[in-house]
Image (cartoon, rainbow, N blue to C red):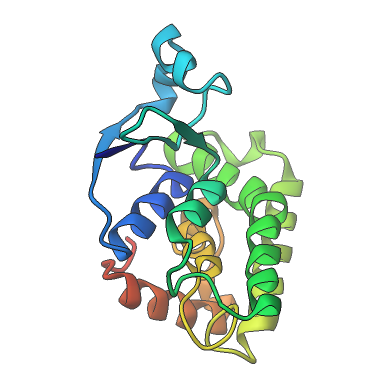
Length: 197
């Protein structure tokens, strides 16, 4: 059985878990406290020299890191990856954008404000600006389509809902992005997730 090493506080880890659950794949979840340095131990670094979660260890001993790479691997041949070549490329476009333009702003503010209790005055103000730009980009798309790619739930939706649904923890108000807020509820329902607190 594959083992998923991850933190329940991390959207990057949760989206891997949600993908496995959506696909009905058996796995063992191994909780890792990344805030305490658990990803920097010699034992963990032997599995993933980058010292990051999520990390999957497959039953044959092979390992795979980076959340979106794991999701794509797990979902190959499933409805979570569009069969149309262009739609598949658009899904990948969103996955790359999520890691470059969305997660570095929104997730970082969540981690610092909500988990580490960093005062707002000590945060880089550019994080809020970049987060608003990311949510505005999503609002523009979701004002015209119910999901990010095509008419079926895809990995793009799973990946981007992870931190978007808790963006308020980083100081963003999703009521300012009504199409995004509606999409979050739709994706949460599809994944069987309780609404975020």
